[in-house]
Length: 172
Image (cartoon, rainbow, N blue to C red; front, side, top):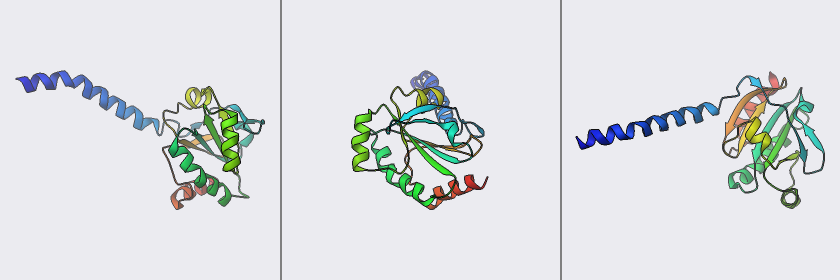
């Protein structure tokens, strides 16, 4: 009887866990084949960057932070991917969440990146528009502005599988 009582009492928790698991796994593909939310952010270089300026190009949009070890570890492979795609209609936009311009400039002086680093200090783009729940988070945006893929976690962007994803997006 005691086991039945424990099972019945834990049932709501099991349901909650299952619902959360389903929602989080669906979040990985929530934007597939939908338009990427438009935004404008200031870059560390002081320029304003708008996603709409990259229509006609494949964009790898990465949300990251200097406080995220996985994010920082991922950046060299993103730089390598950008170099491999040189001369093709491809761009990387790295959106830094909650980092100050000073911290980012210091990091970039030690580790230059061949793509724009944008600042989302209030996390309005990441949280409000793209519902980013963990860092790093990447989106592959097609030439027409559709989100082709929503990729959570650290990746080796120079790996053949990820290069293939970008090349397939370029061919669309």
